[in-house]
Amino acid sequence: MAVTIFITTLIGTIALGLPIAFALLLVGVAMMMHLDMFDAQIVAQNLVNGANSFPLLAVPFFMLAGEIMNAGGLSKRIVNIALATVGHVRGGLGYVAILASCILASLSGSAVADAAALSALLVPMMVAAGHDKKRSAGLIAAGGIIGPVIPPSIGFIVFGVATGVSISKLFLAGIFPGLMMGLALAGAWWIYTRSEDVQPQPKKSPAEIRRAVFEGSWALGLPLIIILGLKFGIFTPTEAAVVAAVYALFVAIFIYRELKPSQIYGVVVSAAKTTSVVMLLVAAAMVSSWMVTVAELPMMLVELLEPLLDSPTLLLLAIMLAIILVGTSMDMTPTILILGPVLMPVVKAAGIDPVYFGVLFIINTSIGLITPPVGTVLNVVAGTGKMSMDDIVRGVWPFLLAQFAVLFLLVLFPELVLTPLRWLT
Image 1 (cartoon, rainbow, N blue to C red):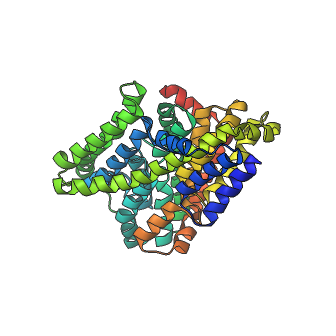
Image 2 (cartoon, rainbow, N blue to C red):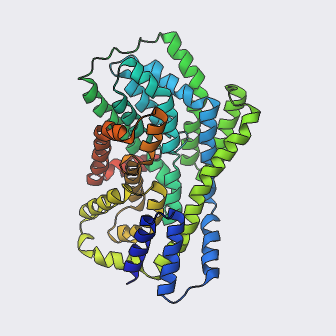
Image 3 (cartoon, rainbow, N blue to C red):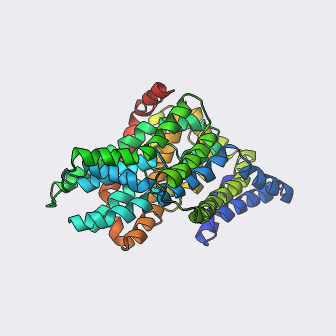
């Protein structure tokens, strides 16, 4: 009965158009009433405890770092490096978008921020060069979802807090799968450009390449600092977020000099607004998560999936398909907060590595950002590129299939995640 109440309340409130945070809060209250243990004080305590988390302090600082990078010229210089190095090959602007997506992913950790920055910079350039607008925007949207996979990743932070998995290990485990996603996009773009008759960009001279790399070296230094700092235990993921924000602010103001002191207030406010949405979701999810634990829903799910526990691959395939369906209608953060704590006991019972599962989970929910009808990243790129949702959906599907291929390859071959993780740790 508790499972029925959980599912019907959640689906019913979402169907009525209630914001996800309030839907999660009502789910917790409904389960409390069903178990005859409703207490407003418990609701308030869980709300406060949900947001009162040291690891979650990383979220506002990474958000702030992303805003500073876009406003302070770091993102633009990353694109310039990609243009100088691969812009001259056939279909070069597409490879520029993919390379820039991978580099920006190691700076901000936000799919929406990366896709917005790249679509504003590259879609007009790709259209002017003769590429199809729908396909160009679809490629940039698909590249944007690498952001939550390559560290630093806000998705990994939320998943780690929700499930108790090491955030540092999640960060390090996401590097190789994120690069695989970029290679898959490059393969799909190569197949597409074979039928195009578009002249490549002029090849840059060695001096121009050196100048672009030199100007962007300050931006490229940030991911190196974060990865080395985490690997050698110099700082925690939360401290890494502070380092990223301070470093980005220093470079934007004193090195590139594109961020004026008068703009800092607006950048902070923008980051605070985005952070408040995430933190409200996390706080509300803590109420429903606490009730899920009290009602022993994970144990019920373990019993339900017991026939699949002896076959981890089949179990993972079933879970991934379920997350794909959920991802078509729900954003990344609520999907993590709702399904993560429920599925983790099942994963552990099957003997699946929690860090490996976390990487698969985040890749899957990232793909959900470019699947209709919700597709948050699709909406952002469509708005930035001034095009309809139907057009960008038609443009993104080859690259969506490429990302799905990576996901199921990782399901079938866990060592693609675990072996690089062992090297890095």
